[in-house]
View 1: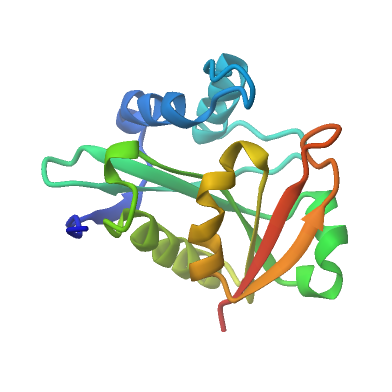
View 2: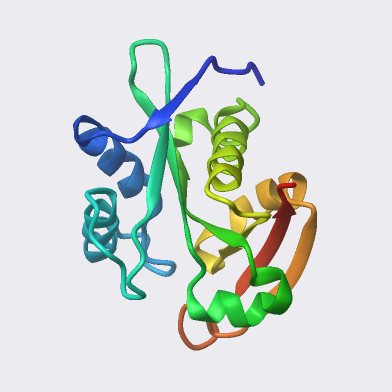
Length: 176
């Protein structure tokens, strides 16, 4: 695969239309494949500064290509209570990676996800985090290899994180 040149920057309101297209590629029902519009809209709200169900505000970055077109996004925030309980002592001083999406045309070893993750790690470190943690549910099983490669440690499964029988795999990456 040929690497793609990317620039990483903070998300702006002008990116929302492009990001919405990327979200619609990925935020799909596990069984029907249909876009989960309510979840897409919730993520777009978080991107505009709305708090999530845990009262967290997320910090978003985007990867842009040559003509400043958005290729992907990631966010960091504090851990949700389930993640904090799962990681125990390692949760102290940790940031959580959220909403990690890369346009399908730019996935598969082109470097966009890796560049976003590197920038997310730097952002988390600047915010005082010592670890970055992430979970991924069954909808994104095909992306688990990305986390297996770029995070230091597989930290097991959170049972039923996304509903009955919908478990989430977890990982941790040390930042300092």
